[in-house]
Image 1 (cartoon, rainbow, N blue to C red):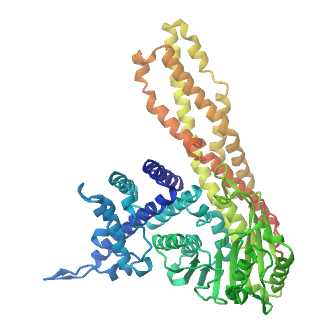
Image 2 (tube, one colour):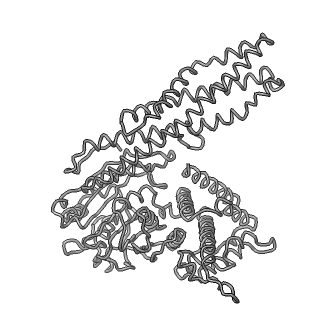
Image 3 (cartoon, rainbow, N blue to C red):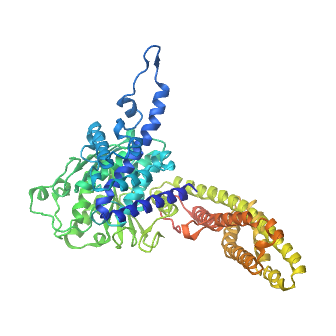
Length: 625
C-alpha cells in the first residue's frame, strides 16, 4: 500500500503545481527548474532538521558554557547539507506578508551555493518571475505535513516523478534529460555497478547514478564508500539538473559540462569500471574533420581509429563506451534499434567489437518506452572480462523483450518490477548463476502467500458483511410488506441471481487460503479463484447498492423510523472499503488484492515450473516473462 500512497501524493503535488503553472502563464521550461528547486530545498531542510536533532542530542555540555554551537562539519559528517538560517524552508514559509518572497527564495539559493562549491551557479534563482501569491501557494504545497515528515528516499522518488512529468510535457529539449526508469533499472541491474569508477558521458539528469545508488544500498552498502561518479553533459541546464538530482539523493559526483564528441572532460579512457548512458540517437552533423575526432583514442579498435562513414554518431558513442572500460569493466547503454544491423563501415566496426568477445547481452525493447519518442530501441551490454574467458567469449545473450511491457498510458509503456526481475534472472542464468532465480522463485511464493492471506481476510469480512446486510434488508422488507402490500417488488428485487454463487466462491476462497503452501496445485487453485470471483462479487455489491437506493427513494424509507434505526450507511461505507481492497479501484489505478494475488501466484507457478526444468550446465532457459 506504500507505493499507492506515494503515487497519490505524487499525483496530488503534480496536479497542484501544474495548475499553478497554468495560472501563471509560464511555459513548462520556465516553470520546471523553480519547482524542482523548491523540492530540493524542502528535502534539504528535512534532512537538516533530522540531523540537527541527532547531533544536538549527542553534543557534550559544559557546566558554564552549555552545549557548543552546531557547525557545518557536524552536518556533513551525517551526510546532510548545512543550511544557513535564511535558507531554511520554515523561514520562507513563515515570511511576513510585507516581505518579498521571490527575493527571499533567491537569497536562500545563493546562501546554499556559497556553502557548497559543487552547487555554485546550479540552483535556480529566478523566482522573481512568479507573483507573490503564486510563490506562497507553491511553498504551502511543499509544506504539507506528509512532506515535513518525508525521508530522503521518498523525496528522491518525488523529484524523479517531477522530472518524468516535465519530460512528458516536453519541458526540457524534448525530454532528452530524462531516461525512463525501466530502462535505467534494467541497465543498472544487468551490469551491477557496485565498485570503482562509474561514468556516464551523456548523463542528462543523472538518473543512472541515482539508480546505481539504490542498487548499492539494496546490498546494504553505502554508495559513497563503493563508487565514484563521473558525468558529462552538453547542455548547461541539464548539467544543473544532474547536480541537483545527486544532491537531493544524498550522492556526490563530478559532473562536467561539455560536448562529448569534441571534449573528453574527465580523461577516463581505459579507467572505468562501469559505463552507463542513454546517448542522443542518430545525431547528424558531427564534424569528423576535426583533429579531436580524427585522432580520438576513444575510437581505437585493433590499433586504429574507426570513423563511421554514416552521418549519424551512433557508432562514435558505441566505441566510446567500449574504450572507456578497463579490462574488467562493464558497460550498458541505450541505442537506436537501427544500429544493431547497420551496414557498410558500421558493420565493420560492429564485427570488430564482436570479435573482441566483449559484447555480452543485447535486449530489444518495444515502442513507447520514451516519453517523447515512440520508436523501439535496443539495450547493449559490454563485459570486457569476457575477452579472456574462453568459455564465455564467443557467447552473446540476445533477448527479445519487445512484447514485454506494461501500459502506463496510451502513449507510454514500462516494465513492471516483476518483468524486470525476470529479465535479470535470465541474464544471471546465462552467466552461470542460478541464485537470482532461486531468490525470485522464493520471493514470488512468499508474496503470493502473504497476498492470499490478506485476500482471505478481506473476503471473509466481505462475506460476513454481505450476508448481514442482505439478511437485514430482507428482514425489513418482509416486515414492511405486511403493512405495505405494494412493496412486493422491493422483496423480489432482493432475490439476487448471483448471491449463491458469490457465497460459494467466497467460502471456497477462505478454505483454500488456509491451505496455501509451496504446493503448485494449491496456488493454482487460489489464482483461479481470484480470477473467477471478482466480477460476480462486484456485480452483487453493485446490485445491492442499487436496490437499496431505489427502495429508499421509491418508498421514502428515510421517513421510516425502523429503516433509519438499521443505520445502514456505516455498513455500506465499510462494504465499499472492503470492495476496493479486494477488487481495486479503476479510477485510481489500484489493482486490488485479488488481482495481485492472482498475478504473483501465476508468477511463482510459471517460474517454479521453469526452475524445475533448468539444466544448470546450460545458459539457455525459456521463461515466460
